[in-house]
Image (cartoon, rainbow, N blue to C red; front, side):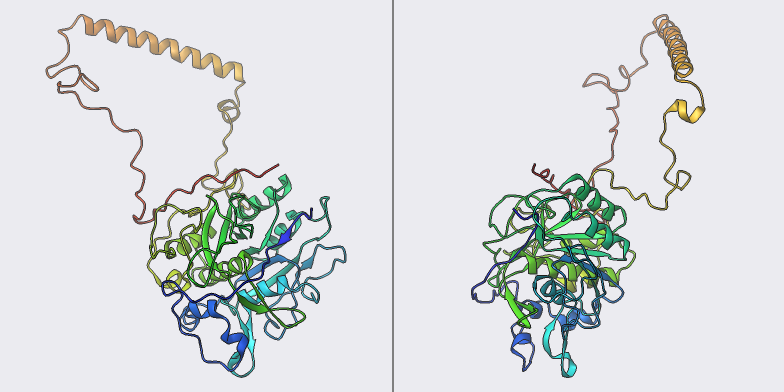
Length: 435
């Protein structure tokens, strides 16, 4: 079995849903642009008045990208190929999947006023193409190298419209590395139409994406589960290709690219937000297939709902926790540049390490303290027994019901209610990777 596979399918025609996708198509003489129903649904002209994704690099870990495509030229960096031929990843001429994802994110069209061809949702973002190894088996096609390369070369969003049944430890560490470096990792859930978790989407730290059809309902092929956070258009999606120049596809690949583009828009508009806070904006402004917003717990089929980029850019939303709605991997606290003496990073050594005393001496001191405390408590108890009994009003704190005792104080403050300022619903646990 191939280590990774792109998420592809062939779609049928469906009527546009009145609930989620109501924007009228833009006027164009180009049938490709006219066919971009998903882009029209986002009301792009309104979105682009707020953000176009400028100054944000989106890494596309996929099959490589045709950087010379008329709708992408100038928006694609050289990148790197981890496939057997090596070199850059911006000259793909055979497999069109990576090119299609790149165009949905950062295509700029062509012709007068850029009215023809594919326009991406974040047309001023830059694409960092990274071609994964397509060989069968072995460690050469691991996602470890591509993820780390993306992080180390300036990506603020990583798009992975690819799936695999499991991750190895190096790949889990690479995702953790991206999380520590404040990079938002976006993964497609897969096209089996089942509840089987596929990776990297189901891994902790990844924003998992499903697909929605033109009728506003979750696409039948879209995999589901407790890790799903968002859905986006994924049926009959026109995009750029290699040969021929354009393609049409259905599946969670395209939906993932749209979510990555929306994240680029938000990161451009709000550069100080963490990756988790960017995800928080996207989830807080999403709408479910039955028209609900601001739900407190993600649904296994549609997560928090369909992305609405303009609302994510324009609504007044508290930043919230730095991790937002993402389930974090273990050891995900930022480490780079934070030494032992950095504020908030005090050494967490044992008492003996901090004091310079040997463990035996520390234990001896602790035993001595306990003995002294025991003597003091004994003296106090004996003194009270010789007194006149408890003070008026009962036995004091935690006394029997009916007395005047004060109930014990809560040890912890109230958990912030979902929907309150800065609050977000706790994410459900993600299933561990399969073996």
